[in-house]
Length: 417
Image (cartoon, rainbow, N blue to C red; front, side):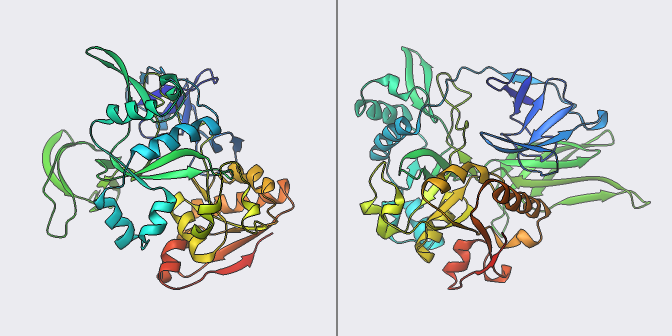
Protein backbone atom coordinates (compact mmCIF):
# COMPACT_ATOMS: atom_id res chain seq x y z
CA UNK A 1 0.00 0.00 0.00
CA UNK A 2 1.40 3.39 -1.01
CA UNK A 3 1.17 6.16 1.59
CA UNK A 4 2.17 9.81 1.82
CA UNK A 5 2.80 11.64 5.09
CA UNK A 6 0.22 14.34 5.85
CA UNK A 7 1.53 17.72 6.87
CA UNK A 8 0.89 18.75 10.48
CA UNK A 9 -0.76 15.39 11.29
CA UNK A 10 1.84 13.20 12.98
CA UNK A 11 1.18 9.48 12.50
CA UNK A 12 -1.32 9.95 9.63
CA UNK A 13 -0.84 9.17 5.94
CA UNK A 14 -2.78 9.86 2.77
CA UNK A 15 -3.64 6.60 0.97
CA UNK A 16 -2.14 6.88 -2.52
CA UNK A 17 -3.16 3.35 -3.56
CA UNK A 18 -6.63 1.87 -2.91
CA UNK A 19 -8.42 2.92 0.28
CA UNK A 20 -9.43 -0.11 2.41
CA UNK A 21 -12.94 1.36 2.77
CA UNK A 22 -13.97 2.93 -0.56
CA UNK A 23 -11.38 1.28 -2.83
CA UNK A 24 -10.44 4.59 -4.51
CA UNK A 25 -7.15 6.47 -4.64
CA UNK A 26 -6.21 9.72 -2.91
CA UNK A 27 -7.70 11.94 -0.16
CA UNK A 28 -8.52 9.14 2.30
CA UNK A 29 -6.12 8.70 5.24
CA UNK A 30 -4.94 5.89 7.52
CA UNK A 31 -3.13 6.01 10.85
CA UNK A 32 0.30 4.54 11.57
CA UNK A 33 -1.12 1.44 13.26
CA UNK A 34 -3.52 0.82 10.34
CA UNK A 35 -6.48 0.59 12.71
CA UNK A 36 -8.41 3.71 11.65
CA UNK A 37 -9.28 5.06 8.20
CA UNK A 38 -10.61 8.55 7.55
CA UNK A 39 -12.56 7.89 4.34
CA UNK A 40 -13.81 10.79 2.21
CA UNK A 41 -16.39 8.80 0.25
CA UNK A 42 -18.19 6.19 2.38
CA UNK A 43 -20.41 7.95 4.94
CA UNK A 44 -21.28 6.75 8.42
CA UNK A 45 -22.40 8.36 11.67
CA UNK A 46 -18.85 8.88 12.96
CA UNK A 47 -17.42 11.86 11.08
CA UNK A 48 -15.71 15.22 11.42
CA UNK A 49 -15.38 18.25 9.14
CA UNK A 50 -11.90 19.30 8.02
CA UNK A 51 -10.46 21.88 5.65
CA UNK A 52 -10.46 19.29 2.84
CA UNK A 53 -14.06 18.19 3.42
CA UNK A 54 -16.08 15.82 5.58
CA UNK A 55 -14.17 12.72 6.71
CA UNK A 56 -15.82 9.53 7.98
CA UNK A 57 -14.02 7.51 10.64
CA UNK A 58 -13.89 3.75 10.03
CA UNK A 59 -12.23 1.26 12.38
CA UNK A 60 -10.42 -1.72 10.84
CA UNK A 61 -10.40 -5.09 12.52
CA UNK A 62 -7.44 -7.43 12.04
CA UNK A 63 -8.92 -9.18 9.00
CA UNK A 64 -9.48 -5.95 7.05
CA UNK A 65 -6.11 -4.35 7.59
CA UNK A 66 -3.99 -3.96 4.42
CA UNK A 67 -1.80 -6.99 3.76
CA UNK A 68 0.49 -5.48 1.12
CA UNK A 69 3.89 -3.98 2.11
CA UNK A 70 3.87 -0.31 3.10
CA UNK A 71 5.59 2.18 0.76
CA UNK A 72 5.88 5.74 2.09
CA UNK A 73 6.46 8.38 -0.59
CA UNK A 74 9.07 11.07 -0.01
CA UNK A 75 7.35 14.48 0.21
CA UNK A 76 9.35 17.44 -1.10
CA UNK A 77 6.38 19.76 -1.64
CA UNK A 78 5.67 23.23 -0.22
CA UNK A 79 2.43 24.73 1.18
CA UNK A 80 -0.15 25.99 -1.31
CA UNK A 81 -0.20 29.76 -1.91
CA UNK A 82 -3.18 32.12 -1.53
CA UNK A 83 -6.00 32.25 -4.08
CA UNK A 84 -4.85 35.66 -5.32
CA UNK A 85 -1.36 34.30 -6.01
CA UNK A 86 -2.75 31.14 -7.66
CA UNK A 87 -4.97 33.25 -9.89
CA UNK A 88 -2.05 35.40 -11.05
CA UNK A 89 -0.04 32.31 -12.04
CA UNK A 90 -2.98 30.38 -13.51
CA UNK A 91 -4.07 33.43 -15.54
CA UNK A 92 -0.59 33.55 -17.04
CA UNK A 93 -0.81 29.81 -17.72
CA UNK A 94 -4.15 30.26 -19.49
CA UNK A 95 -2.50 32.61 -21.95
CA UNK A 96 0.09 29.95 -22.80
CA UNK A 97 -2.29 27.00 -23.18
CA UNK A 98 -4.63 26.38 -26.11
CA UNK A 99 -7.65 24.16 -26.66
CA UNK A 100 -7.09 21.26 -29.05
CA UNK A 101 -9.49 20.55 -31.91
CA UNK A 102 -10.18 17.15 -30.31
CA UNK A 103 -11.34 18.77 -27.06
CA UNK A 104 -13.22 21.49 -28.91
CA UNK A 105 -15.19 18.82 -30.80
CA UNK A 106 -15.89 17.00 -27.53
CA UNK A 107 -17.28 20.14 -25.90
CA UNK A 108 -19.42 21.00 -28.93
CA UNK A 109 -20.68 17.54 -29.93
CA UNK A 110 -20.82 15.74 -26.56
CA UNK A 111 -21.39 18.62 -24.14
CA UNK A 112 -23.51 20.79 -26.46
CA UNK A 113 -21.58 24.01 -25.87
CA UNK A 114 -20.95 26.75 -28.44
CA UNK A 115 -17.62 28.34 -29.35
CA UNK A 116 -18.34 31.61 -27.56
CA UNK A 117 -19.20 29.89 -24.27
CA UNK A 118 -16.21 27.54 -24.49
CA UNK A 119 -13.74 30.41 -24.79
CA UNK A 120 -15.51 32.51 -22.16
CA UNK A 121 -15.24 29.65 -19.66
CA UNK A 122 -11.50 29.27 -20.25
CA UNK A 123 -11.31 25.53 -20.90
CA UNK A 124 -7.83 24.42 -21.98
CA UNK A 125 -5.85 21.36 -23.10
CA UNK A 126 -3.02 19.90 -21.01
CA UNK A 127 -0.49 18.85 -23.66
CA UNK A 128 1.50 15.65 -23.46
CA UNK A 129 4.97 17.00 -24.31
CA UNK A 130 7.34 19.93 -23.85
CA UNK A 131 5.66 21.16 -20.71
CA UNK A 132 8.89 22.67 -19.43
CA UNK A 133 8.73 25.13 -22.33
CA UNK A 134 5.24 26.20 -21.27
CA UNK A 135 6.41 26.61 -17.67
CA UNK A 136 9.31 28.76 -18.91
CA UNK A 137 6.92 31.02 -20.86
CA UNK A 138 4.65 31.30 -17.81
CA UNK A 139 7.65 32.43 -15.72
CA UNK A 140 8.43 35.09 -18.33
CA UNK A 141 4.97 36.57 -17.70
CA UNK A 142 5.57 36.72 -13.94
CA UNK A 143 8.05 38.48 -11.66
CA UNK A 144 10.34 35.55 -10.96
CA UNK A 145 10.53 31.75 -11.27
CA UNK A 146 9.91 31.53 -7.50
CA UNK A 147 6.32 32.59 -8.26
CA UNK A 148 5.66 28.94 -9.22
CA UNK A 149 6.46 27.79 -5.67
CA UNK A 150 3.28 26.67 -3.91
CA UNK A 151 1.24 26.50 -7.11
CA UNK A 152 -0.34 23.04 -7.63
CA UNK A 153 0.64 21.48 -10.95
CA UNK A 154 4.11 23.01 -11.19
CA UNK A 155 7.25 21.31 -9.83
CA UNK A 156 11.04 21.29 -10.18
CA UNK A 157 12.58 18.62 -12.40
CA UNK A 158 16.21 17.58 -12.03
CA UNK A 159 17.83 17.67 -15.47
CA UNK A 160 21.19 16.97 -17.06
CA UNK A 161 22.16 20.62 -16.79
CA UNK A 162 20.50 21.34 -13.48
CA UNK A 163 16.97 21.80 -12.08
CA UNK A 164 14.19 23.41 -14.11
CA UNK A 165 10.44 24.04 -13.74
CA UNK A 166 7.90 21.78 -15.44
CA UNK A 167 4.26 20.69 -15.13
CA UNK A 168 2.79 17.39 -13.95
CA UNK A 169 -0.47 15.59 -14.79
CA UNK A 170 -1.86 13.41 -17.56
CA UNK A 171 -2.88 14.97 -20.87
CA UNK A 172 -6.53 15.90 -21.15
CA UNK A 173 -9.21 18.59 -21.05
CA UNK A 174 -8.72 21.17 -18.27
CA UNK A 175 -11.51 22.87 -16.32
CA UNK A 176 -10.70 25.93 -14.18
CA UNK A 177 -12.20 26.17 -10.68
CA UNK A 178 -13.12 29.76 -9.80
CA UNK A 179 -13.84 31.44 -6.46
CA UNK A 180 -16.65 33.92 -5.80
CA UNK A 181 -14.05 36.62 -6.59
CA UNK A 182 -13.49 35.17 -10.07
CA UNK A 183 -10.06 33.86 -9.12
CA UNK A 184 -8.80 30.59 -10.64
CA UNK A 185 -7.85 28.53 -7.56
CA UNK A 186 -7.28 25.17 -9.24
CA UNK A 187 -7.84 22.93 -12.26
CA UNK A 188 -9.29 19.52 -12.88
CA UNK A 189 -8.20 17.40 -15.84
CA UNK A 190 -10.56 15.10 -17.72
CA UNK A 191 -7.94 12.53 -18.70
CA UNK A 192 -7.99 11.50 -22.36
CA UNK A 193 -7.01 7.90 -21.79
CA UNK A 194 -7.38 6.76 -18.15
CA UNK A 195 -5.25 3.71 -17.34
CA UNK A 196 -6.98 0.37 -16.86
CA UNK A 197 -7.07 -1.29 -13.45
CA UNK A 198 -8.46 -4.45 -11.87
CA UNK A 199 -11.11 -4.54 -9.16
CA UNK A 200 -10.68 -7.75 -7.16
CA UNK A 201 -12.69 -9.38 -4.38
CA UNK A 202 -12.21 -12.71 -2.66
CA UNK A 203 -9.56 -15.42 -3.09
CA UNK A 204 -7.85 -14.13 -6.21
CA UNK A 205 -4.69 -12.29 -7.22
CA UNK A 206 -4.22 -10.70 -10.63
CA UNK A 207 -2.33 -8.08 -12.59
CA UNK A 208 -2.61 -6.43 -15.99
CA UNK A 209 0.14 -7.54 -18.39
CA UNK A 210 -0.70 -5.05 -21.16
CA UNK A 211 -3.65 -3.54 -23.00
CA UNK A 212 -4.68 -5.05 -26.34
CA UNK A 213 -6.94 -3.89 -29.16
CA UNK A 214 -10.59 -3.12 -28.21
CA UNK A 215 -13.43 -5.44 -29.12
CA UNK A 216 -16.00 -4.87 -31.88
CA UNK A 217 -18.02 -2.63 -29.52
CA UNK A 218 -14.93 -0.46 -28.90
CA UNK A 219 -14.66 -1.65 -25.30
CA UNK A 220 -11.10 -1.67 -23.99
CA UNK A 221 -9.44 -5.03 -23.30
CA UNK A 222 -6.32 -6.25 -21.54
CA UNK A 223 -4.27 -9.41 -21.18
CA UNK A 224 -4.22 -10.26 -17.47
CA UNK A 225 -2.29 -12.76 -15.36
CA UNK A 226 -4.57 -14.40 -12.76
CA UNK A 227 -3.63 -16.57 -9.78
CA UNK A 228 -6.47 -18.73 -8.41
CA UNK A 229 -5.99 -21.75 -6.14
CA UNK A 230 -2.28 -22.00 -7.00
CA UNK A 231 -3.03 -21.91 -10.73
CA UNK A 232 -1.63 -19.14 -12.95
CA UNK A 233 -3.74 -18.27 -15.99
CA UNK A 234 -3.38 -15.76 -18.84
CA UNK A 235 -6.86 -14.32 -19.49
CA UNK A 236 -8.17 -11.55 -21.77
CA UNK A 237 -10.67 -9.35 -19.92
CA UNK A 238 -13.02 -6.77 -21.39
CA UNK A 239 -13.85 -3.46 -19.72
CA UNK A 240 -16.87 -3.59 -17.37
CA UNK A 241 -17.36 -7.35 -18.00
CA UNK A 242 -17.37 -8.53 -14.38
CA UNK A 243 -16.54 -12.18 -13.72
CA UNK A 244 -17.92 -13.81 -10.57
CA UNK A 245 -17.04 -17.30 -9.34
CA UNK A 246 -19.10 -19.36 -6.86
CA UNK A 247 -18.31 -22.74 -5.36
CA UNK A 248 -20.46 -25.81 -6.08
CA UNK A 249 -22.30 -25.12 -2.84
CA UNK A 250 -23.15 -21.61 -4.06
CA UNK A 251 -20.74 -19.69 -1.84
CA UNK A 252 -18.93 -16.66 -3.25
CA UNK A 253 -15.27 -17.37 -4.11
CA UNK A 254 -14.00 -14.33 -6.03
CA UNK A 255 -14.85 -11.64 -8.55
CA UNK A 256 -12.70 -9.71 -11.02
CA UNK A 257 -13.52 -6.69 -13.17
CA UNK A 258 -11.46 -4.66 -15.64
CA UNK A 259 -12.28 -0.97 -15.39
CA UNK A 260 -10.93 2.45 -16.19
CA UNK A 261 -9.37 4.37 -13.33
CA UNK A 262 -10.67 7.82 -12.46
CA UNK A 263 -11.51 10.05 -15.43
CA UNK A 264 -11.24 13.34 -13.52
CA UNK A 265 -8.07 14.27 -11.60
CA UNK A 266 -6.98 17.39 -9.77
CA UNK A 267 -4.00 19.12 -11.33
CA UNK A 268 -1.69 18.75 -8.35
CA UNK A 269 2.01 18.26 -7.67
CA UNK A 270 2.06 17.43 -3.96
CA UNK A 271 4.40 14.45 -4.45
CA UNK A 272 6.95 16.39 -6.51
CA UNK A 273 9.99 18.49 -5.65
CA UNK A 274 8.86 22.06 -4.84
CA UNK A 275 5.33 21.13 -5.95
CA UNK A 276 2.14 21.77 -4.01
CA UNK A 277 -0.97 19.77 -3.15
CA UNK A 278 -4.37 20.95 -4.33
CA UNK A 279 -5.78 20.44 -0.82
CA UNK A 280 -5.95 22.61 2.32
CA UNK A 281 -8.59 23.40 1.23
CA UNK A 282 -9.83 21.67 -1.92
CA UNK A 283 -11.16 24.26 -4.41
CA UNK A 284 -14.84 24.75 -5.10
CA UNK A 285 -16.10 26.19 -8.40
CA UNK A 286 -18.45 29.15 -8.68
CA UNK A 287 -20.20 29.66 -12.02
CA UNK A 288 -22.19 32.59 -13.37
CA UNK A 289 -24.26 32.50 -16.58
CA UNK A 290 -22.07 33.16 -19.62
CA UNK A 291 -23.59 36.60 -20.40
CA UNK A 292 -22.23 37.83 -17.03
CA UNK A 293 -18.65 36.71 -17.64
CA UNK A 294 -17.40 39.68 -19.74
CA UNK A 295 -18.44 42.02 -16.94
CA UNK A 296 -17.13 39.99 -13.99
CA UNK A 297 -13.91 41.60 -12.78
CA UNK A 298 -11.34 39.93 -10.54
CA UNK A 299 -12.19 40.51 -6.86
CA UNK A 300 -15.71 41.69 -7.79
CA UNK A 301 -18.55 40.16 -5.78
CA UNK A 302 -20.99 38.36 -8.12
CA UNK A 303 -24.06 39.86 -6.41
CA UNK A 304 -23.25 43.09 -8.26
CA UNK A 305 -24.04 41.30 -11.53
CA UNK A 306 -26.80 38.81 -10.65
CA UNK A 307 -29.25 38.06 -7.86
CA UNK A 308 -27.44 35.65 -5.51
CA UNK A 309 -30.25 35.23 -2.98
CA UNK A 310 -30.88 31.81 -4.59
CA UNK A 311 -27.87 29.67 -5.46
CA UNK A 312 -27.84 26.19 -6.98
CA UNK A 313 -25.31 23.51 -6.05
CA UNK A 314 -24.17 20.49 -8.07
CA UNK A 315 -21.05 18.31 -8.36
CA UNK A 316 -18.27 19.28 -10.74
CA UNK A 317 -17.22 22.41 -12.62
CA UNK A 318 -18.71 21.57 -16.02
CA UNK A 319 -22.15 20.74 -14.60
CA UNK A 320 -22.10 24.01 -12.69
CA UNK A 321 -21.15 25.95 -15.83
CA UNK A 322 -23.88 24.31 -17.90
CA UNK A 323 -26.46 24.60 -15.12
CA UNK A 324 -25.77 28.32 -14.76
CA UNK A 325 -26.31 28.86 -18.49
CA UNK A 326 -29.44 26.71 -18.69
CA UNK A 327 -31.23 28.12 -15.61
CA UNK A 328 -29.61 31.60 -15.53
CA UNK A 329 -28.77 31.06 -11.88
CA UNK A 330 -25.46 31.22 -9.98
CA UNK A 331 -24.10 27.72 -9.37
CA UNK A 332 -21.54 26.13 -7.09
CA UNK A 333 -19.73 23.03 -8.37
CA UNK A 334 -18.56 20.90 -5.45
CA UNK A 335 -15.51 18.61 -5.72
CA UNK A 336 -17.75 15.89 -4.16
CA UNK A 337 -21.29 15.63 -2.80
CA UNK A 338 -19.96 15.53 0.76
CA UNK A 339 -17.87 18.72 0.43
CA UNK A 340 -20.74 21.17 1.00
CA UNK A 341 -19.07 22.72 4.06
CA UNK A 342 -16.51 24.28 1.68
CA UNK A 343 -19.13 26.69 0.37
CA UNK A 344 -20.72 27.77 3.67
CA UNK A 345 -18.72 31.00 4.03
CA UNK A 346 -18.82 31.85 0.29
CA UNK A 347 -22.63 31.47 0.37
CA UNK A 348 -22.84 33.87 3.28
CA UNK A 349 -20.52 36.37 1.60
CA UNK A 350 -22.67 36.65 -1.53
CA UNK A 351 -25.88 37.02 0.47
CA UNK A 352 -27.49 33.67 -0.31
CA UNK A 353 -30.83 32.95 1.40
CA UNK A 354 -31.95 29.82 -0.46
CA UNK A 355 -29.79 26.86 -1.58
CA UNK A 356 -31.02 24.37 -4.21
CA UNK A 357 -29.14 21.04 -4.36
CA UNK A 358 -29.05 19.61 -7.90
CA UNK A 359 -27.13 16.34 -7.59
CA UNK A 360 -27.41 13.49 -10.12
CA UNK A 361 -30.78 11.74 -10.49
CA UNK A 362 -29.39 8.41 -9.25
CA UNK A 363 -29.42 9.90 -5.75
CA UNK A 364 -32.63 7.95 -5.12
CA UNK A 365 -30.78 4.62 -5.57
CA UNK A 366 -27.36 5.52 -4.16
CA UNK A 367 -27.33 4.96 -0.41
CA UNK A 368 -24.01 6.74 0.09
CA UNK A 369 -25.25 9.89 -1.66
CA UNK A 370 -28.52 9.74 0.26
CA UNK A 371 -26.56 9.67 3.51
CA UNK A 372 -24.47 12.63 2.37
CA UNK A 373 -27.66 14.51 1.52
CA UNK A 374 -29.11 13.89 4.99
CA UNK A 375 -25.92 15.16 6.61
CA UNK A 376 -25.93 18.17 4.29
CA UNK A 377 -29.48 19.09 5.35
CA UNK A 378 -28.47 18.71 8.99
CA UNK A 379 -25.35 20.83 8.44
CA UNK A 380 -27.26 23.73 6.88
CA UNK A 381 -29.97 23.57 9.54
CA UNK A 382 -27.37 23.83 12.31
CA UNK A 383 -25.04 26.42 10.78
CA UNK A 384 -27.19 28.80 8.71
CA UNK A 385 -30.62 30.36 8.44
CA UNK A 386 -30.68 29.59 4.69
CA UNK A 387 -33.55 27.50 3.36
CA UNK A 388 -32.62 24.31 1.52
CA UNK A 389 -34.35 22.64 -1.42
CA UNK A 390 -33.72 19.58 -3.56
CA UNK A 391 -33.98 19.57 -7.35
CA UNK A 392 -35.23 16.19 -8.61
CA UNK A 393 -36.11 14.60 -11.93
CA UNK A 394 -36.62 11.17 -13.44
CA UNK A 395 -33.42 9.36 -14.34
CA UNK A 396 -34.83 8.62 -17.80
CA UNK A 397 -34.64 12.37 -18.53
CA UNK A 398 -30.92 12.54 -17.82
CA UNK A 399 -28.45 11.66 -15.10
CA UNK A 400 -27.03 15.11 -14.30
CA UNK A 401 -28.52 18.60 -14.35
CA UNK A 402 -26.58 19.17 -17.59
CA UNK A 403 -28.11 16.09 -19.26
CA UNK A 404 -31.56 17.14 -18.07
CA UNK A 405 -31.41 20.66 -19.48
CA UNK A 406 -29.76 19.46 -22.71
CA UNK A 407 -32.85 17.26 -23.21
CA UNK A 408 -35.11 20.29 -22.76
CA UNK A 409 -36.42 19.46 -19.27
CA UNK A 410 -36.43 21.34 -15.98
CA UNK A 411 -36.16 19.84 -12.49
CA UNK A 412 -38.87 19.79 -9.83
CA UNK A 413 -37.76 21.69 -6.73
CA UNK A 414 -38.87 20.46 -3.29
CA UNK A 415 -38.16 22.32 -0.04
CA UNK A 416 -36.11 20.34 2.51
CA UNK A 417 -35.36 22.84 5.26
